[in-house]
Image (cartoon, rainbow, N blue to C red):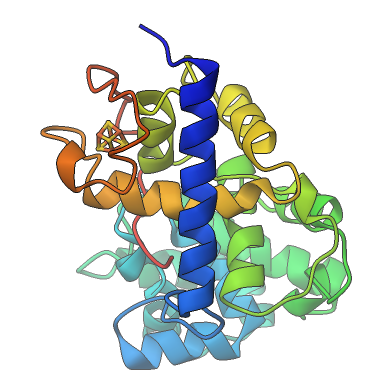
Length: 264
Ligand code: SF4
């Protein structure tokens, strides 16, 4: 069973309405918390380098914990000096491995973190904010982010959305942004009939078709619906924001790969 064109249009319109309401209500705005640990959150907000390193943490664990990662790493290292993180990879490995391990991927993350520190020093003079200066184009920022080990299309797309929404960066070319290929977003796109195939290309194409001016706008509402009502098991359609427009293709599901939690 597939959604009709009219159903897809209605779903897209409702998602956009929801996104605009969220923006207007101030439910999500610049300065919103990345993690519920106040000190760790301040660390991420005050340091572009911590934000970039935090992006590396955002997989395989709830994002509230992931975003606390850079602060915990700094505590264990006794510093957050990029030159030392780049030059002393063994210390980074030891800091991650110290119980409780800093990340589920305890062998991979230290490699990515040291590599990111080296790239930041070599190409950005140690200042991650120069990756995404105000006025930079979304495509260029995405390209720069993708050069970092451990940042693929999903993280880069999410980073662009967070830079604009949570860090107040003014980027050009938001029509080139998109939704992150996240398990909650994918589930809602599939069940609401916006896509019939669960692939990154299809999900991005559907977001661009739904809102060409700023496809990334659909990311937050779809993610919230996926997390709160369109759950993997027992979707609560009657309580869902899309209840009046969604064709409710609830037999459709996605694999667990790609789940994320906050911040949104
Ligand atoms: S919870 Fe139901 S109404 Fe909402 S998006 Fe999922 S399938 Fe559609």
